[in-house]
Image (cartoon, rainbow, N blue to C red):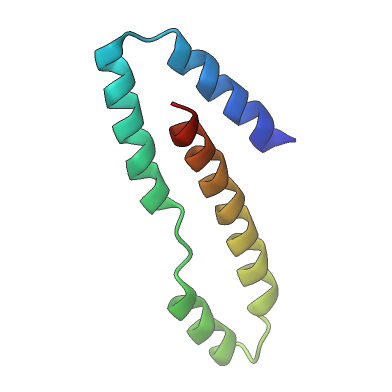
Length: 79
């Protein structure tokens, strides 16, 4: 539900901007996509060193980052 609200806020903000501001906002969004990548190698190593205890946080982080990326991708595609 939160990601849908975030998406709606981004769309409302985007619609109110001018053409140049929209271009800048899209560039910022594309840069944010890279910010929400899960470092699976790091999480694998943490899981090995913690005897698989890190698997649960890894799953939560991956799902959270995935939903954030999907929200940003939908916004970029809609623009």
